[in-house]
Image 1: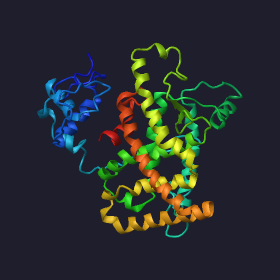
Image 2: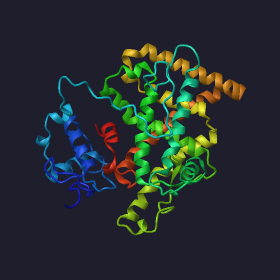
Image 3: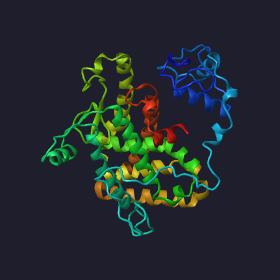
Image 4: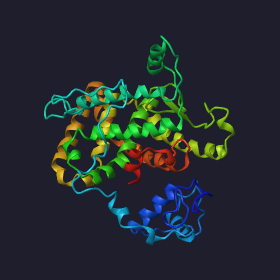
Length: 383
């Protein structure tokens, strides 16, 4: 089968009348279901390729029709989602599970949940920091994915050294896929600490997570990046790296593969944007772990449109979060505390701007290969 009739990417199917990739299938379905009216600012004749398909939605949609994709092929069940028995409960967005032998659930008084309970007394951010430390300790175990270990008596010492040591390597597509999934898992557990999120319908939770999970992941990765001396490496949660030079750390065999030079041209966009918008500013500002927890919480509270029924509780949580950040800054920065608080809050805007760079990379990069994402990632970002 040839490439996608719209953009030339790898074909996923012909369900709407023409062979198309998953990205164009999802784009066409959403455009028809939502009945959107796009406009072209460049004469309605934009080239639509794998690299440029996200630039003009009008021309992309017109090309979908030109190659034979049919709106009538989109059935009503595409809107409703998978069919399920009336007696079956609605599925959870994510199952609480242990992802690694080194990850033990955070203590709970009830013994039935791994959530850190946010009570009305005590430090809100201090409690969230304990969850953050637990999540970070779990991330290290993913460094060894696909690695060969010494077999024999020293095998466990070898594994321990790789997990806890200073070794790091170039990220592979498997690392990126797993780290995005891990970002969703961690973001859900973080958001579930708050009743205002737990009480939302699953559809609204997914809408929040489609952006918030990326933002949450960028904070974790940005903090790791800021801790390294190098200014040209973007670190993932499991201590693997992405470099603006696509060929850095790339195996020789992979350098001879098809499309490698196209990938090398597109790859630096995300790395440079992530470094300039998140990683290097976090290093310059010396963002600490407390402020990381604050950033994640403020980014969650930013989805105010979904919390209209809990507006008063949201305002109380926001005030409490800012108050605790202010107390933290007074102890650490004294006279410059107010400036520091404002700087941290404003930094959330820079993180949000980088979300689009991550999203775009899922369409063009072999590391962010949408075709290889597991069901959880697809469910959150493509539903």
